[in-house]
Image 1 (cartoon, rainbow, N blue to C red):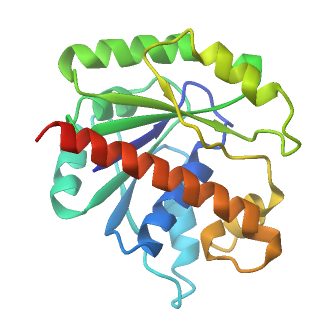
Image 2: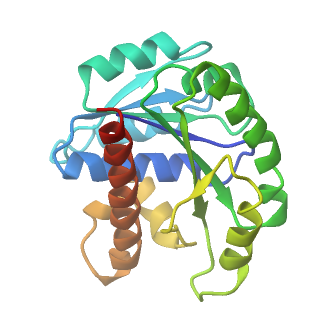
Length: 224
C-alpha cells in the first residue's frame, strides 16, 4: 500500500499529516515506512528525535531524492505500507512517485484558503498527466487546518473542490489545533498522547486513517 502526501504549495501541514498518519499505522500494528522525499527533511528529523525515546513504537524512515519510483517499488516489497512525504511544489520526486505503482494513492493536502485552493488546478494537471502512464492512480484531497468552530470555510472549500473531478474529497478533516505542534517536537503523534487536550486531534487522525485505509482496501479489492 502506497500513500503519497503531496501539495503544490508549502506550509499546508503536509508533513504533520503524513507523520501522524504513519504513527497511526504503527499503533495499529501495520509495518509502515516513511519515505522522506522533501529536501527540508522534516520527517527524517522527526524520526531522529523520536529515536531518543526508546519506549515509543519504532517508525521506519528512508530518504530519497530525484526519481524515487524504484525506491518506492522496493519499499513496497518490504513493508505493508509506504507513506511518502514530498515537498510542497512540483518536483521530480512528486511526478516519479505518482507513476511508481498502480496501487498508489495521492493525498493532496490543502488548507481552505483561496490561495491554497487555487493550486489545485496545477495539481489536477499533474494528476491527469500521471494517469497517462498510471491510469489506476487514485487522488484524494485532505482539508487541513480547518477552523474548529465549524465555520463555513471548510464547506465552501468542499464546494470549490467539486469543480475538479480529478480529486475525491475526504469526508474527514484536520483542524487547526496547537496540540499537533506541541507533540511534534517530542517525536510524538497525537494518537500517542493521553488526556482531554489531545482527544479531538486523536479522533481526527484516527478517522482520517480509517477512511483512507478503507479506500485503499476498496481500491485493491477492485483489482482482484
